[in-house]
Image 1 (cartoon, protein in one colour):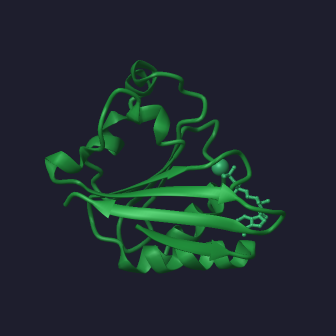
Image 2 (cartoon, rainbow, N blue to C red):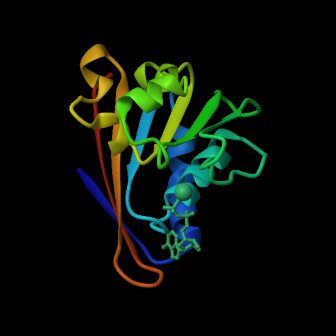
Length: 148
Ligand SMILES: Nc1ncnc2c1ncn2[C@@H]1O[C@H](COP(=O)(O)OP(=O)(O)O)[C@@H](O)[C@H]1O
Ligand SMILES: [Mg+2]
């Protein structure tokens, strides 16, 4: 497990950008952390690292935003409004979570993982990310890779 202390929005975005440059097909990046933690900002940095030029905003209402103009397809999901696994499946999002055909970055991943484990056991490469708000502009970003 690695821990990164970010002191600014720019540092959080830069961390995401670095991850985007290293990303490989089939990667599932699951983000946890309260509202305003910086999940969307980290996802936006990752998009930039993949070469996505479009502006990345919170997909809270759309549930999933797809970006096809980068080095790999990027699927940005926000499960905040979906309470159960059934809701997530009914919304048609399972395909992105089980074995993404590209890179899936998922805000509120814990909504999907209730009573269920990461798809790492089925060969999917996963990064579990947890962001803690430590102050106005300080964030503790810890992450761990498994599977794949
Ligand atoms: N170090 C930091 N990293 C990320 N965001 C920060 C940081 N410091 C302040 N912020 C602010 O926190 C907010 C994070 O918003 P956002 O990325 O939408 O969070 P989330 O998606 O987790 O709700 C932004 O307004 C951003 O400017
Ligand atoms: Mg968000």
